[in-house]
Image (cartoon, rainbow, N blue to C red):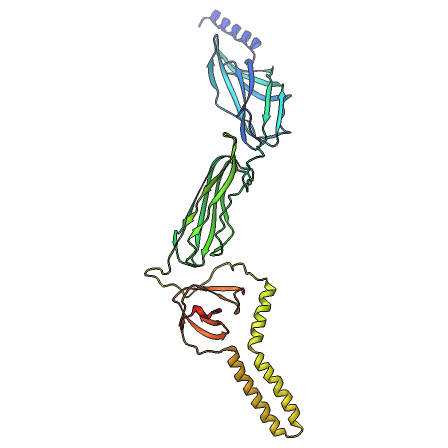
Length: 415
């Protein structure tokens, strides 16, 4: 390269450096999609800048527009730039998007100003430089309207879920025996805002023992996984009702209810090829129908009632011995022994001690702490299981199985 050409390149480079600016901000606009979201409905707010090719926008600041009183807005994230052809030029579109959610009804028109620092990298021959310049542009009017949710047609149990949702559920296993653990698995899929809303789980009824649900996963956008353990107590426990989620559909503008179920459970009375244990115990005790104090009183009264004849005989023996001792001491001793023997015999007859011979269960039954249908449940005995009677009281029998004792109705034992 000749000296003259080199001098010319240097001159042009220096001139370009002195006159260069960091690109041009040609226009800017705000977009909200959907245009009129409901309160609680997620929406996208987008800022689009039209700049000269190759220019970058930094240190963005907007004056005169604030949605803080009526919405929560997440961080703005830049998107890939794209080039668009205008009638006389080509421009680059820079997009920045954030997800927001309205917190209360609102309608207002905003006018604001966008301030930005435009940066552009340029090369002139051997020279490569970065140029920046400040720019400000007036934003067109932005109408913000957040609509309130309708007050009519609100389904029972609605907790603020808004969007579109679908509920599915399964029973694992679908076939079980009374006393088996069964998992009710509920899955919620959707697109929208779930927040703290919960799926309304079915109430299986008295034929099931129900444990609190376990939340396995949750996504505020509309994904939820639940698991609830239920235990069928009788062969009538064949149906579990529907799980549901009431929600508002912002596209149609109506309330809906997503449902799953009812769920069918097949109950078997015997497991082919398997031996069912005589006693089936659970990690968590079922909720008693009595308070702890009531159960203690019931158990104490039951024990006292069994020893009531002997206590009466003992008191009578003391009285008789005291009366006869001054007159005939030897007669007093004999009379006391006779009265005590009669008391022991009456106590045995009263408490109903029975011969310890094995018996079998006729049906599924819950063994209880004392002879009362409202006493605390201890364990479950399956049909056909062998137990050993220990004691009898009225229509109840104290049985022993695998080292555990509990009271069962006498009618549930084979004669």
